[in-house]
Length: 287
Length: 333
Image (tube, rainbow over all chains, first blue to last red; front, side, top):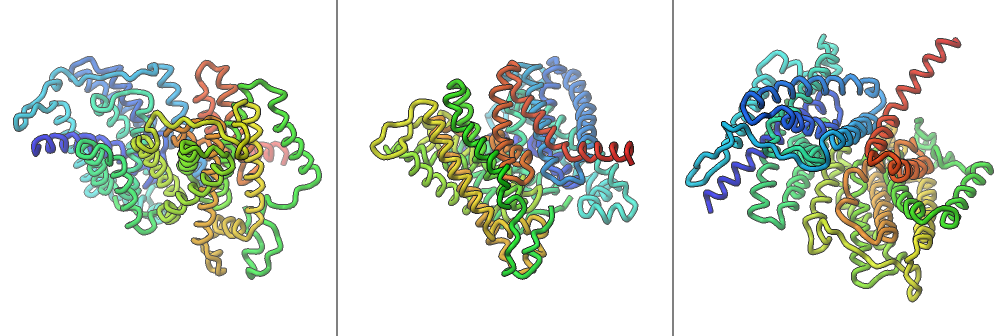
């Protein structure tokens, strides 16, 4: 029982880290641009379809898919940022409507291009086996994914807390007007945040495709769970997103195994508890 | 949008109606009467399929009024109104399953359940403003949908609940024909619209308008903004819940799909089309359903893309208008 629970917890960690990669982009965009990007799930799904197109069963295929995904994600993110710029002075509602519209259009384009059925994606052959953990066979790809996502989280943490760009980013998140007054090019920071956010979402899609593969509706599933991560972690907070993503991952996997009937309520209860305990959530920002 | 003059003066100087609530001109009243008559004549002028789509449009129009009340009037953009629609619809469906098929009673119970659900969630939503309201309402709405999907013993899970047709009065025959169902939904919708019109003429609407424009100033004037927002949120919940009962009357079915983000998003889009006006939101809802269900059927399954394009067009209306104005001004200085 103990080993089974640990294996399930490992599954939860993998799912949580997948959500973290996607939700970090979402929270970054919110923190820097005060924008709720409702097309973020479409970027994830785009990444999953890129994995479908370029993965050939080997590691080089995955590497190509990752490279293409990062380039496409960065381009999509910065294009979205530029397209939303004319709406900046007109309030958050129009930005939300525009990103929703883009999500609807993307969903239609994906269905037209790839059909309405789920497309299963196998991990590269080299990572397709399993490793024995305490007499339990565990998929190698999942372990590798956990390691890569954890490295990505560490790299993000270090670049935000230690690098010069991280300082500029945190200053812009905390007070955009003050950052601009001290000479920070906030437009460039916004473009960088949109590009990085897009790249993270698509990277999540490429790497996460064997875990949560391309299918109609995956975009909204990922968007909803990422958004719950952002709300629980505190909008704009990367550290908060990490803790929240791991928590949501555990509730979604361990909760379903241990208490299948109450798991959906558990996530709602966590969200309600966090929102109740937190005071006004409008400008909670810690990078 | 300007702050209503009454809110900048002492609370007793309440003489100017809020924007959009002035007594309509005879021409506007005649136009409104014409639209209502045309809507009432629909079962005799179009086919049954279009009549059933018109019933759906009225359900979305009710939800759009709810979204307009909190988004356009109170300034809280919501992506979760379908939650309260779902609560109302499940309430009506559960009443129907216990043998209570009386439509007006289902409507009252659904509105009450919607209001209660809104009051219960209000403390979580009303702490936030702006984009965070969108986030919190979205997250709550999607979690509520998951609960509806998993709580199979009560909600029927993803299979949903099928209900018998409603009756208008105890002892009368149930409404089965599409035309009668539509007329019942239209009558309920008109009653709800009248209630909203009365609500918009109250002091509460003035405070909500003022709080959306300049909350600190309205607070400083001694108005209880939080209490007013709670009342407005509850009224919007009741309205959405009533929409849920109309959904049951029209479709005889509810499932978690009726609480999906798409439904809340369409209500928000209709509110945005209406630019703060209730009549605009209703017209927007009717236009959206017409685009999706009538025009979308002609485009070979691309109804989603049409609705997506509508979202983008509405989002960019203001910068495009400003750009066109600037161009015209340059040409004809």
